[in-house]
Length: 250
Image (cartoon, rainbow, N blue to C red):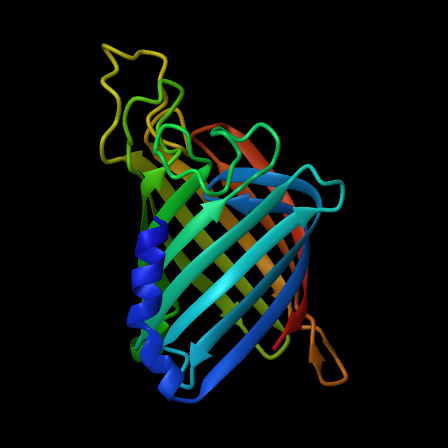
């Protein structure tokens, strides 16, 4: 994984010959929800620092999240390319919260011992060219602790999602989405009857249905949007609610 990121960073070096942009954002949320899972709960501060080319097509960044009680801790590195609605992203996800599978050491990359996940995603936003507020996405875990309890093979857990902006005005936005998960290389159920199908669920199916509303709060020149969002996971028969506020976006 590290070699992949180094090679990709070298490929993006031409950005250094052009004008660059630095970006910083931060938000506060009551829980961190990701692909049908409640990854962290309690009050969580998220922060994102990145550098992009002048057109914001290429971006390399660092993302971190931590609960105020210290139960949830995550530090990610990512690379992103977007153009005309198409978006390609590769993330090195490192959740070092207590109880996460792997040995908890950052520089361990062996598949059967690492705590990392390498996520590759592609999406297309129809709103950019077609003025239709639909986004379709596909993400597959290529390397890392996506190996189940048996820890004998990577199952390549895959998450697909469709998201749609139902309403958008100067003050409000309402969004809905539905996402499903499955494994490209699942364990043989006859040989491993106790293994779940993918990282996101015991079986393949719909794992992430969301409905949320955002109030585009402005205080002076600062934009501080506040969001309330419900997430249902039919596969696990669970539901979660989160509230968040964007504190900074530079």
